[in-house]
Image (cartoon, rainbow, N blue to C red):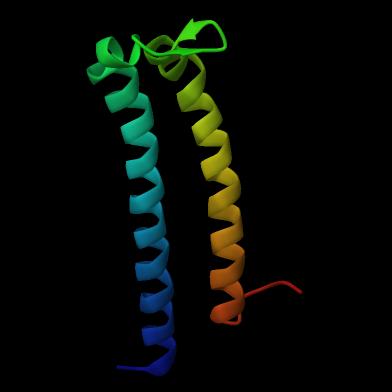
Length: 87
């Protein structure tokens, strides 16, 4: 296999791994915490709101925004590792 092709395959494989992990976290927060576990979480209050309601209305959005920043940071590190950074 050509070294450049191995580089591209490794880069893409790592990128997909990052995406799978980050989207799994988002799925857990938005679907599991916001829908499936909403009743048990509603017994806990956060800032005056039921926690299950908070996850359904705010938590998934905040989590998604944080995950975007985490993804950017991870991809910048990956770009540097494979010599694809713009700096």
